[in-house]
Image 1 (tube, rainbow, N blue to C red):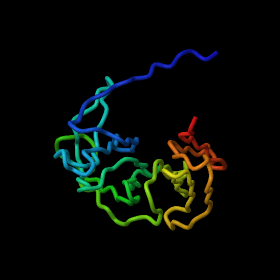
Image 2 (image 1 turned 30 degrees about the vertical axis):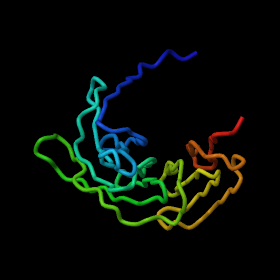
Image 3 (image 1 turned 90 degrees about the vertical axis):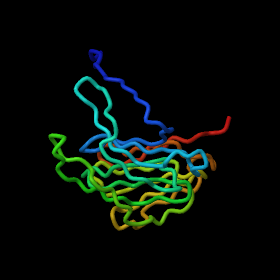
Image 4 (image 1 turned 180 degrees about the vertical axis):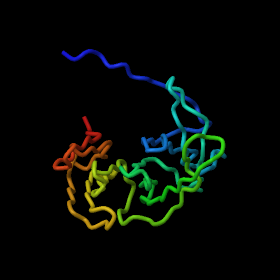
Length: 187
């Protein structure tokens, strides 16, 4: 049996509900907000960092997503782009990094929405393959699609992956030869 690993667990409040997170090369990306904005909370994607003690920083940068609530996100393995799942669609964002005199490393200065992706309906899970050459999406109605990246050519469509229940998580194997899906099965 392997010895236990020391894992840092940290949490912080950012003034609105968070629904999505992903590790990036330059920090941790978080997505969340107030949904339709009736409550006055901004929908946004934030970049934060974790210090050597495991504590999370205040946002280093953020981008407002207007009335679209970022509920899922996946950062590409190269760290320069991400896919964000909203209620009705998924969108591609380019991450632009620049030096900031207040920090010793690059931080996101601009995250620009570059295009809406072909998948329709709410995507309940999005993930890139380890090499970043494929993007998998799982929907609220139980459909799994795998696309080539960045071409977005449909490679696989599995209509009834979990008997029409939502896909709650997707993960590629290390060699990307398999995709594991987890569904919210009905009892």
